[in-house]
Image 1 (cartoon, one colour):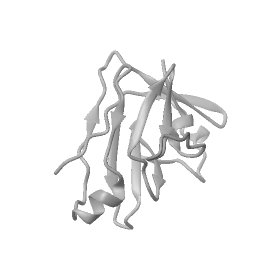
Image 2: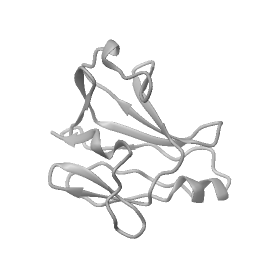
Image 3: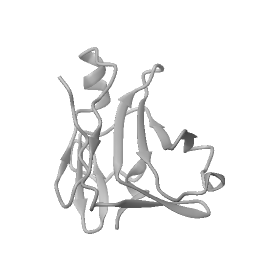
Length: 129
């Protein structure tokens, strides 16, 4: 069973937690692409990036890795402690991914299973342009 991460318009985004996917023995979670007219941009130390694609996958060390294709970011602006470059991709790693994300205004707000706001994670980096 494949699970999609969908970044599109004001659509609520549901995804199965990485732990669930691991239990099912999955090694990769399918790529999902937002509409080319929907750009997401984020702020990194010293600059911003924007991109239209996102991939959620399980890495060999059993962590979840979120990957964004970027447009126009200077690689020197990447915070090496949290984000890393891999070809034309900007990557960050999480040990778990909550099941529910939903759009709230112009930002993607991350909620836990109980519907409480999660203060850490990538959700504060993404902004809808």
